[in-house]
Image (cartoon, rainbow, N blue to C red; front, top):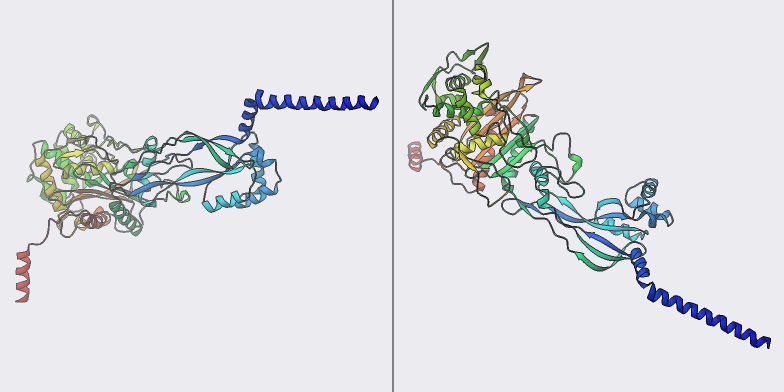
Length: 565
């Protein structure tokens, strides 16, 4: 009887247990299914970002200048990683070249987070070694790293991005929104170590950034950079800048500076070497401004190309100040004033025309206002209101002191001379938008100036070293003393040259500036003009621009016959 009762109790207990298990199973599988599935998903399903690569920057011929390459970054979930033996961290720290204690402390300080970067942008081999350790909670995140094929040659134009691929300087900064893509998102299944084992759902595709085509010609960029760097080093100069523009439309074909840096290795970035001096640095242009003083004189109606100026005895008093020439040029015409670079002659022209006429000529040429290039940090220059000019300011402004401009502004202004008096706004990015241009001087005045500037690059002028065999070249040298602590320092100069070629039908305009050349050679004709000549010699041939100054074949034949006789 007792045995039968016990059997019933045991069977009843089993039945109750079975019913309890069944009820619990129904509760888990049916009633709480959504909740439990959500809990499981929360532990193993993640929504991860799909990185979008940044748009490529190319030159005018489609050659890459900035590209984004895929890389991996190492990250961790601190709670998962810290919950396992510390020997995992020691091996991981060694691979990542970190101190194990520092790594452990870093994870402790961020223990409330689920995502912490340990090292960004590692090479694929290192990423594979990290994953081979199978450290819980440690995984790789796909990202993109910016690469600049031209290195330091194009650094000042392009600028660079930070580790998050956001533009920090140059055109990378100016066009950051255009270049930046839109990240996508997907849901993935991770294992207990935090590794992705399966893609579950694509939520939103990544949208890559848009490409940006520049007006820069890589060939001319290399040429200009090579010659500028060589000149700065040869003369022990502090810095240098050069810019080449297309005379026909204002496209900037090259823009280079010294010193430079390698944007692929930010460790080379020192002090102000990231500054694009062609658009941010203000200079007094010295004698390169004299052609525009001539423009004011010619268009005032008071002077003609053949008008004479008395410059004897090579100096003149303006108030308490004295303007001097290197030598006494005597009675000269405007062409000689330009070719010999007479300060006295330029001062007399500036004092002869109305102040408003001179100011308007300079302002129309783009001095004292931004070029509108869109480059970050571009300086507008300084051109004081003519109502406040004293006589000495008018005189010195005639030969390039008392106003400040950028190298790009100077190139833009010389482009107007090359383009028969019409000035285009400089352009760095290719576009189908209408070109902005306006008239600075009459075609007749521009033609007269071209002749004067050609003489300045002949044996009669100061710019002979800018000449290019087989081509007619027009240009002007400049040598300006620098302001230091509010005073013009003795022996501290800027050497300048601005010119164009071929003079018969100008295609290229170039400005070269060498800042504080050392030694005995510091004149623009000695230091800056040879850079122009060397670059133009190769640039004109690269662009298949035909020579316009070949020797007459009949004259050569006669000379050969005379020599043979």
